[in-house]
Length: 174
Image (cartoon, rainbow, N blue to C red):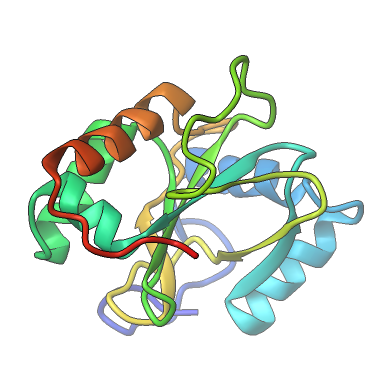
C-alpha cells in the first residue's frame, strides 16, 4: 500500500496513527476471523465485512449527498460529510454511492428506507484499507478516527432530510 504521494507504507511503526490502527482492528473484528480482513486489506486494499455484528451502514446515493451538501465539488462534499456526520463514510465512486457507517441497532425505525436504505445483518460491505483516500474507486471520504467511531444515525437522517427538503433531488432509488 502507499500514501497519497505514492510512497510505500511500511507495515511497522509510523504507517499510520495508533488510533487509526486500533479503529481498523475494531472494524476487522466484524469478521469471524479478523486476520482475514487484515489480509484482504493488505492483498487487495478492500475487505468484505459483514454488517450487523459491529455496525450497519446507510447507503447514500451520490445525488442525494450532493444535494444535501449543496454542491458536486468533492472536496466540499467531503468536508460537509465530516462536519455533519461526525463519523466514517466510504465513497464508492464507480457506483455513485456513499456508505455511512452507523450503529448496528438504531433506537427508532429508519425513516428513509427507499431514499437511503439502512443495510444490516445479512448484508456485506466492501471496506477500503486505511490508506485508500480517493479520489477514484472505492475509498474513504471520511476515515474512522478511533475504536467504535460511527456516524450518529440522527445525523445521517438529518443529511437525508436536508437533501430532500432542498427539492433539488431528481433521482430516486427504485
